Amino acid sequence: DTGVSQDPRHKITKRGQNVTFRCDPISEHNRLYWYRQTLGQGPEFLTYFQNEAQLEKSRLLSDRFSAERPKGSFSTLEIQRTEQGDSAMYLCASSLVGTLTGELFFGEGSRLTVL
Amino acid sequence: AQSVTQLGSHVSVSEGALVLLRCNYSSSVPPYLFWYVQYPNQGLQLLLKYTSAATLVKGINGFEAEFKKSETSFHLTKPSAHMSDAAEYFCAVSLGNQGGKLIFGQGTELSVKP
Image 1 (tube, rainbow over the protein chains, first blue to last red):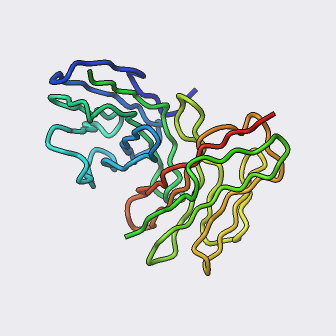
Image 2: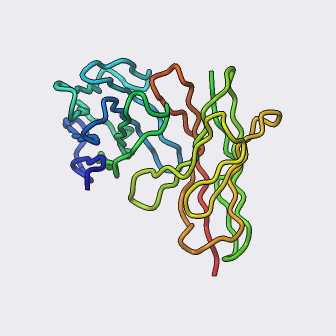
């Protein structure tokens, strides 16, 4: 299967610890997006990359959050000094520039629980 | 700014009954509109999309949606619900000039009773 993959699927951490999530997009896709989804809510946009360039960041992305896509392939999302409010599902999606805008392919998500 | 409102956070229907999930959007320019489905502990899967071609859009699993500009709506329907349709459904809007970013509604959880 060559869909979007995310790792880990589940992460439990204590408040104040750092966590990192990885996303591997569909191989030929040059756009990569991160979303956050809390219980009972729709996904909220965090940031997106086109190749290795981070082109937009949401105001939701505080200074404790950093995302990278160093070689234009996989991406990492790091949360420093986690807080209980960071508990959420973190979704990664990818798309191909030139195809229909907005048709994103999502991974299964990484669920974060901060104790 | 564009936004999406889904009316009803939870809808319950009987198996075989009509499914109607409501979505209204706000956009200053013609939007692209989407419905995604999310099964428990899974990612989002595209059901269907509106791209300014036909206003009645057919998707997977027997779902369809109609774009009504005058009502700024994009409601999702299915003539006959199946137990396997139980899931969370999200309506989303995208503008063509914003890098493909999607703005999602809050979602509607569909329950199907036997």
